[in-house]
Image (tube, rainbow, N blue to C red; front, side, top):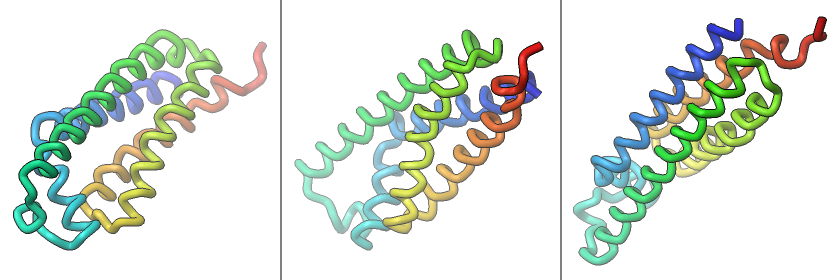
Length: 142
């Protein structure tokens, strides 16, 4: 189960990296869905050159921070998690849980369907990968 979980979590992290890169490479696509969901306008209708430029930089910065987190999670996964070290299980639970679940809840609140789907996929991969090997981490040691 632990090997299967490492594979699932590797897929989840690769997916998270792609999601992060999407915010870095195409920030306006990410902003479009947020603007549409939160204020009901298109990005062109909500355009204010200074505001839109600042928002673009914020989205790129957040994507960069998310990508840095993904890189750190890969280290946690391959250094501690695959060796069934409890600290790694808790690190992924807290760090990835905060990232995926808060993102999902926020997007549900504003009704951003594109990101609800994208975040939902991440949450499912995360939970399956984390919960599949629970016995390896918390079962009785022989």
